[in-house]
Amino acid sequence: MGLQRILLVEEDEGERARRAVMLVAQGYRVATVSSPDDAGAAVGAAMPDLILVGLQRRPEAVSAIVKDLRSRFREARIAVLMHESHRLCAVALDDVVVIPAERPRDFVRRVARALAPRTAAKAAVV
View (spheres, rainbow, N blue to C red):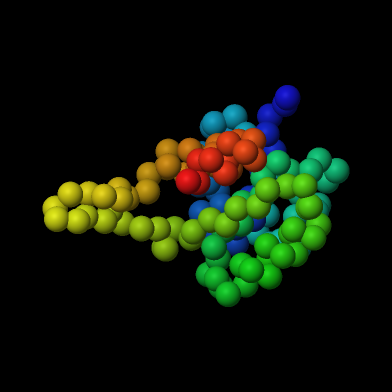
C-alpha cells in the first residue's frame, strides 16, 4: 500500500498550510484546496483516502460542503475539523486537567485514527 492520500479543504490559508505541513511530515500525501469547488482538480483520478474539511469561518456551510463532497467522493472518508479559533483550551475540574489543550500531535493522531480500518475506527470512538 502506498502513501495514504488526504485532501485538505480549508479556506483559512494559514491553517491550511500549518495542517498540511504536519501531515506531510508524518508521511501522508496531501493535496490542499481553499474551496470544495476545486477538490476534483486537486485530486485528479486518485481518490483520496480521507477528506478533511476545515470548520470554516462560515460553519453553517459545513453540512452542505460535506454533502457535496460525499456525492463526488463516495469511497473517501470525510472528517470535519475545528477551525483554530474554535479549538478548546484546557478544561479543569477541581483543579485537575480533565481535557488538555489540543497540541499538533493530537491533530496528527486523530488523522491516523480516521484512516484506520473502519472497524478499528468505530472501536476507537467508544
